[in-house]
Length: 238
Image (cartoon, rainbow, N blue to C red; front, side, top):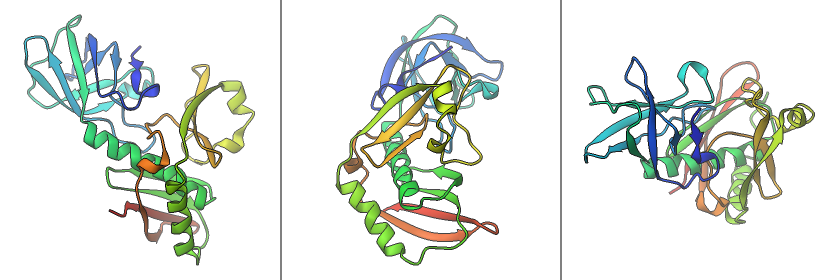
């Protein structure tokens, strides 16, 4: 099992770690890591693994192996010289990329507040993202919704995390906004992300500490993706 350091500190950029395994495909597992593994629409982190001899391994992504949510595989660039089990290394994420993803992921939580419809899908990028909603019609007041979104950004709401038990999560299904992706249960507890007094939902992703860090936002085009499915794009305005 890997210790997911980003769960408690999404701003942690590097950490010493020990290599616990190397997969047949060349993936590297560590006992602890700041790397977020691709899930929930958020891409896996990229970065480097620094070795004690001064060399480094470029990591192009991080994934959960075969759907195992308790472990993270760091995927190196093809042809890398791999470390050995037990070796002490330093794992460092590409911070500029991660921070963009954190800002956008948090912004999409706000988007789910101004569009109060069930979420059917989503994707997070460094400078743009989108959510799919079970929404029969496009709202006519998009300008007002974008203004509301930016007011929440400027109001500087604090963002915190908390944990509840699987049983508590099962007793509060109204917290779940996504229709197709359910919160990971079966490990005894579920992580919630709270944005001030405006939003609370289960989420395992990385977020900024305050909505003011997001910056100005712009709602892009809304595409029809089914009888009632609408895709809403979101961009950083500057």
